[in-house]
Image 1 (cartoon, rainbow, N blue to C red):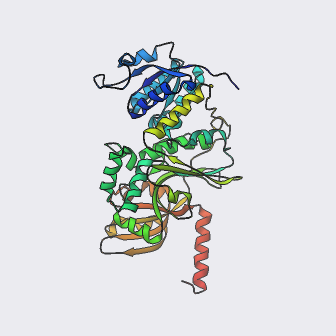
Image 2 (spheres, rainbow, N blue to C red; image 1 turned 180 degrees about the vertical axis):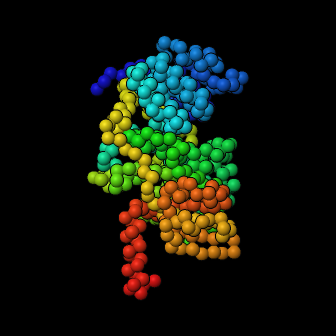
Amino acid sequence: MSKRKKLTIGLFGFGVVGEGIYHVLNETPSLNASIKAICIKHPQKERAAPQNLFTTDHDVILNDPEINLVVELIDDADEAYKIVTSSLRNGKAVVSANKKLIAEHLPELIHLQKENGVSFLYEAAVCGSIPIIRNLEEYYDNDLLQSICGIVNGSTNYILTKIKEDGLSYKEALQKAQAAGFAESNPALDVEGIDAVNKLTILLGHGYGLITSPQDLLHIGITRLNAADAVFSDEKGYALKLTAQAHKLSNGKVAAFVLPQFVTKESQLYNVKNEYNGVIIESKLADKQFIYGKGAGRYPTSSAVISDIFALSYNYAYEYKKFNRPEKTNLANDYYLRVYVSFNELGEVNKWDFEQVYEFHSTEERHYLSGIIHIEKLKNAEWVKNPLVSIILLPDGILEKENIVARSLKKLSLQLAGVN
């Protein structure tokens, strides 16, 4: 076993997570880590730590030769980028929870780690207390990994749970999430699916060695969902979840997106409620495995940060083996999705964009259709941008071309046999 080293930490940010980390380190000497300085934005604010630890000057930490680990816990991704890249260039290991920073700059951050011989860990950036990154990094071979499907945003899952189980409106559920500390005062990153697609970008890297950008992935959040969609979900016995998905297709490429989805009772995701996250990982040999835990809140994030600090005391580093393979995995752009769409006016959705429409009905308030649509059509159609149009993935919603042909032949054979 490698010898543990003492970690002298420079901490950026002293919010609920940063303060929690400070107290845990003080109360757990076995971690062999201590905080030397804490950089903050508002020095006048009272804090539960000695005043001599605090500074507003980044360079106090970045230029201190005794500090060998920077823990970055601020909510400004642009400022975090400056802190993380400067730390790596100065030969300091880094722990971060900033998924936007990582999703948008991962290739550069990998290069800086290698160039400067230091480690950058970020388990806390994805799924809170669930050790999903390290599992994908260490355990699942790219060639055997079939799919990743999960609830990766605790805030939206909390909101959807309160709508379903407590009968709250979207606005009431959002306010409750904010009061509980699971959603920010400006919750757009969560409810628009941006947080989830940032996390999915990171998972694609560690799962498949796939370098992509959040802007390349289809992502739709929960703000479009209509009360009638929840009624439909209940009638069918579904649960409504926001899922991030990556599926390896028969051609070796990976289909990836973030969408609301109807989940059946047979899925492990059905009973993932409130601020919890759950991820189903499927491999060729091990079939489906399920990881579950809290994804939002002070303590889940703190748990993941502490885990990374402990790992760094043994010089742990991501090896990025899948990134370095000569054969590269690419993002798929030729597959189909089975979706449910609801809308107010008949002209709002172009049914000719669909490969098949196999269900259509109307009420006085709302129109509904279920059909199969190509991913590029769904990404580019004008009506998809309409905030009044709900788009929800149906169970087993990913199809390849051969699946479409098989469905058409089956339907034709049933028609010829006189079966409706």
